[in-house]
Image (cartoon, rainbow, N blue to C red; front, side):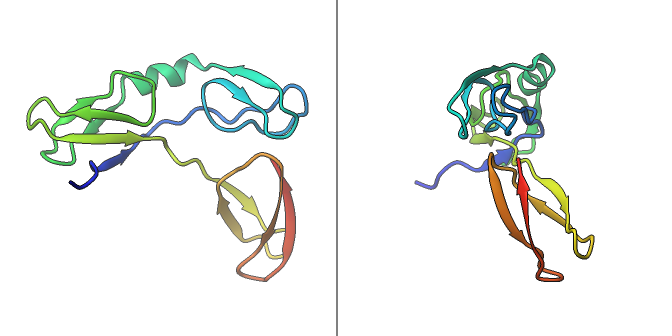
Length: 130
């Protein structure tokens, strides 16, 4: 049996910094552990939680609008009209970074810590820290 189709969520938890070391925390809600210093932080954001609960998506089987009803992602839903099963996945967050050499815009997924990037336009290497 094939896995159920996936629909990406339109909403994502905010990117927040660790109060201990000022690096970016892994994306998510609830208790999140800093990958740099190991501190456990509680991340809540009521507007995002409400947006995730009330998020409406189209059923990939019959195009009926389905309300998620929960802030958890990923979540498996069943369409009330066609009984088709599908999964709402977490939104993939990307940020734009400007190359210091040629000012090209690079879109990357942010991860905690320091990363070395190479610009595809000018082959310049530079570091970014989240």
